[in-house]
Amino acid sequence: MATPHCLIDGDEPGRPTLLLAHGAGAPMDTPWMISVAEGLASRGLRVARFEFAYMAARRTGGPKRPPPKIDQLEVEFALPLQVCPMMDA
Picture 1 (tube, rainbow, N blue to C red):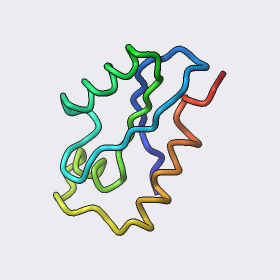
Picture 2: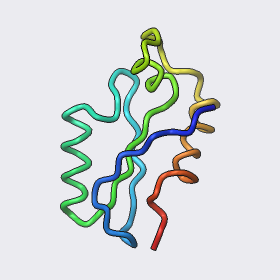
Picture 3: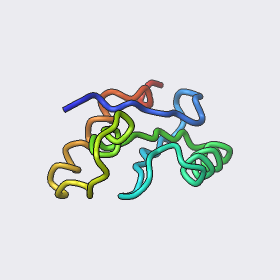
Picture 4: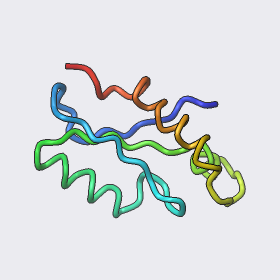
């Protein structure tokens, strides 16, 4: 499983952090996701956005397909907690 790439809004360390995942049909950098992340950051939260592997694969020419079963997504959701620079104080 590939290491997820993270986008961070509200970079100030020590802020409460929200891990924000995209929906089934759109990636982490859509105008809506950017607006939500920036809005939350302007209100004092730090927001870490990431993409599940099936969505990240689309960026490199992978086919558009539905998300995998929830048990795989749960494992992938835990990865950003380990690799995104969001837990530093």
